[in-house]
Length: 124
Image (cartoon, rainbow, N blue to C red):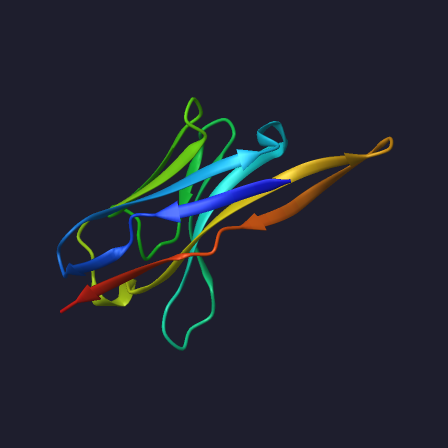
């Protein structure tokens, strides 16, 4: 199993920056990818950015060029650097870890773990 703890959320003015952190613990060897999701007021949870175990990053179109996801394997931490923030970036940001687990002789993929979230509020 994997435990995830997010930090770094807060209140920022439009155009400002924040850096979110997600500290992971537990069965680190089982993690295949990590991601940040967000859920705005009255909206469904949406994918913001992903990074694979090999370091390949992908972003939602709405954050490309403004957000950067990175991981520090030595610290078991994933970061989301958010620049040029907009009011529509407001929401609870969740850290996600996708894992693989072996039960007997069978590998299971796509098992997801979630943090409890950190609130980001961007004022206009």
